[in-house]
Amino acid sequence: MENEIVVAELERGPDQKIVVRRTVFRGREYLDIRNFFLADSGEWLPTKKGIAIPWELRAELVAALERAGEG
Image (cartoon, rainbow, N blue to C red; front, side, top):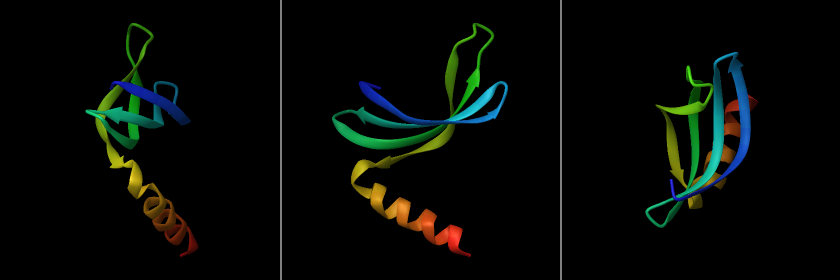
């Protein structure tokens, strides 16, 4: 990633967390939601499990999550 801002970190256990980031990749902005794991080196590393949503679609994602919570 060329540039990133960490928006939130959600703990899933002692060696896993979900990281929400605003990123720029190849000149485009994304909202990246990805699983991270604690490596043997002590560094948090991203996994392939996650999704990068184009930044301009973030409001639609938030609306969908709110609708999901209503049921």
